[in-house]
Image (tube, rainbow, N blue to C red; front, top):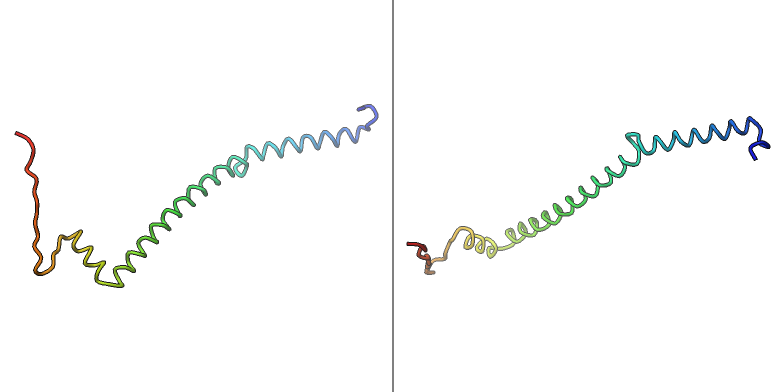
Length: 102
């Protein structure tokens, strides 16, 4: 088969094979090659996950801010649970467990 192909065609085919090899080498080993693309995709996926978590957190904080702006009930609830505040006329009982031990 190679006998019927001229020398020029043989050289052209050899040139194409060398060019294909060089392009494949660049694709797999260069800075902008496939390994680089794969690592960038992993970074993008991680960043998108983090962005989704932060967006959910921001939504929760925005809902809390809206609750605090709309009425006194949310403020009162916070003052009672976090600061231990009581209303006038209410009795406050503090139950202390005795320490265990000798």
